[in-house]
Every structure is written in structure tokens, then in C-alpha cells.
Image (cartoon, rainbow, N blue to C red; front, side):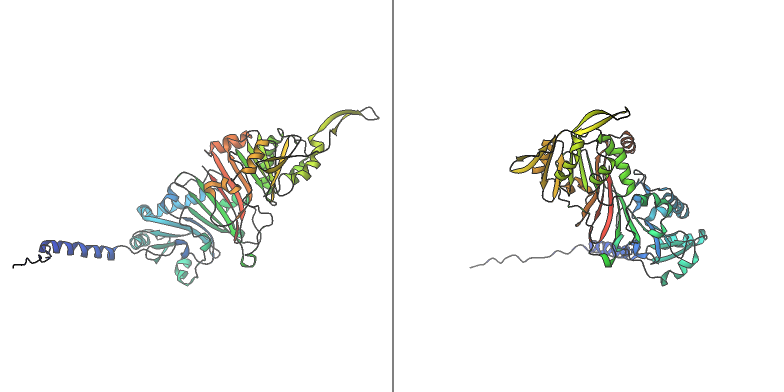
Length: 453
């Protein structure tokens, strides 16, 4: 009986020429890796000296080629642009291999200094040393170049401790740091808009543009360790309810900047007050009861106000202003004067919608939802608010911050719906159709963020 054997598995070797070709490609790949310029692993800002009092960091090529941060007119970009032009003139073609740039100053030197991350750093450094002797150059890492007009910094750089920049180590857009006691002139307009904490010495900023065209400006101060657990008693819960469809939302904390309150009051609120039933409220009452700890929601001719305090107690105070009857009287000397007399006392009507209570008085509707109190000239707005799952933070959209924080002041606006023509024109001329600005606080920092498109 003949038994068939299973075929023996055989391996066919590559032809000798193929082996040599494979080996050659492998060796060339290894050689290319070894000869390729080595890259540093540290973020560029980690190379800054500890005594840095200001830096302006372009995190990639696009930020100094095309990022437009002039729209809000709160930062004068003339000087930063001049610094990039200065580098272009210095480096010539070397600017095209530059990946990142930091322009900085120290408390010991008034001169401008630069740290660059660039390809072919060794060749560029050698060329600059020979052809641009008016500056001092130091290759401080494989692809990191220090450029300074002062020889002291380059000769003593290795002796200097490094700056701690964990608070602003962003890998996108423009990063800025400055000491409050040494504010650069081109940032002075920006600081006027901020309610800075006088006990915190340093200010950080990040500016970038998303792929969808939204521009973002984020400015903050880091709390000192001794106050790390402090939080503002004026901060709001982000969970206050709002219905959908707002044209404009304004929010005021207890300590909103004076300049901000004046502009909002004169340019936005006063044109609206002429249409609201309590437009005869005194300026003092407006300041005390509307421009502090209050949020205002507008949609066409409907409005909603949100407060930490019960509106019913305020309505009783407003009754003479809400229900005035004009009466002509004459003084003993014959002078005629006009007197406004209250027409009725406050009678609150109790109502409900989908098992949720609200109230009505003289064309105003109110409700309490959680810790917040609501007042509106529209019953439909109050009813929509009672059942809304849409909170204050939802209106921030892509402008939200990561982590826990409480919103203090807020503006969320559709530019076309602003009644003040000057502000509307200023925004639309800059092609800003939607704007979100808010201040915030958490247990580590206080800050401000603006987003627009």
C-alpha cells in the first residue's frame, strides 16, 4: 500500500539582486534618519529666562503670516508686525524655515530678544554670525536659536534659570505674557477693558483662529497659592435657564468694569428703555437694580431679565413708575407743574404652565427657577423659560472653556439686531456678525474670553 506524503512546505528566497536592493533601501533610510536635523522636545516658551517680563509667541508659521487680530481694535498690532518684519529682513530666506517665534524682554534688559525654532538651525546660525554681526546669536538647542542685540544675554544665557510657563503653554495661535507693572504700550488699550485683580501681578493671553473662521481672544490671571481656593461671591451659576432664539444677551456682575457699564448703558440699554414699560425708572435704580447681578435676554421686542433677587419685591418699588397717571397742579404762585400719581397697588396674579408656577402683574410676568428669578414682558417667553433645557453656558457655543468655571459678565449678540447704529456699524464694518464676550472665575484663575466671526 503506497501512502502519499504531504507536500513539504518550501520557502523561496528572493533573488540575490532583490536582497541587495532591499538592504540598500534599509541602509539609506537609517542614514537619512541619522543625518536628519534633530528636533528639540521642549515647548519653545520653556527656553525663556526666568526674569522675562514680557513675551509675544507666534506658535506657528500661519500666526505671523495671516492671523488677523485687529477686528476688535483692542490690541495695536503695529509693533508685533514690525518685529516680524525685522526678523524677515534679518533672516532673509531663513524665515521660511522658521516654525515658531518668541519676541521677549527681561527686567535686566530693555532690548528686544528673540528665540526661534527653525530647520537647519546650525547653518542659519553660522550664516547670521558672518553676515549679520550687529546681533548676537546662540544655538541653545538642536533647532532653537537665541537672537539678541545685547551680548550679555547670549553670553550668560546658560547661567539663567528658566521661566515657568505652564500657565500659558499653548500650541496654537499667539501667546502673550506681561507683568502688570511693565505693560507694553501696544497692550495698554487692552488692559483698560479688563477688571484686573490688583493682587495678581501677571497677565496671560491666547489669540487664535479656528478652521471655521471663528476668532478667539482669551485673557486671564492666575491666582496666587494663598488664594487658590477663593472664588467670587458675585459669580453666577452657569445653569440659569434661557429660551432659544436670543438676539442679544447682556450679563452684569457686581464688579463689571466702569468703561464697560457706561458703553452698555448708553449705547445698548437706553435705546431699549424707551420701549420698556418701566422707562421712567431713575438712573440710580437702573444702576442698582439692572446693571448689577442681572442678565438681560432680548428677542425682537420681547425681553427677559434674570436676577439673584426676587423681582416681586422690586416690582412693588416700581409700581408708581409702572402705573403713573399724569395730573396737572398749580403752585400758590400760579406756576403749573405736572405730577405723576400711582394708579393702583401691586396685585400679583398666580398662574402655572405645565405644572410650573409663574406670576403676572401689569403686563409683566415672573417666575423662580432654582436659585434664579425671572421677569419678562412676554408670557410666552416666561413659559418657554420654565420648560427650557437651554442654559447660559449653552449660548457660549464653541466659545466655552474647558473645566469648571462660573460666568460673571456676558455679552452674546447678533450684530444685525443691535439697535444702536454706531455699534452695529462698527461691528458689521469689521465683518463681525456674531460676538460672544464673557468674564469668568474658577478656583485657579480669573479671566475674560471673546469669540467672534
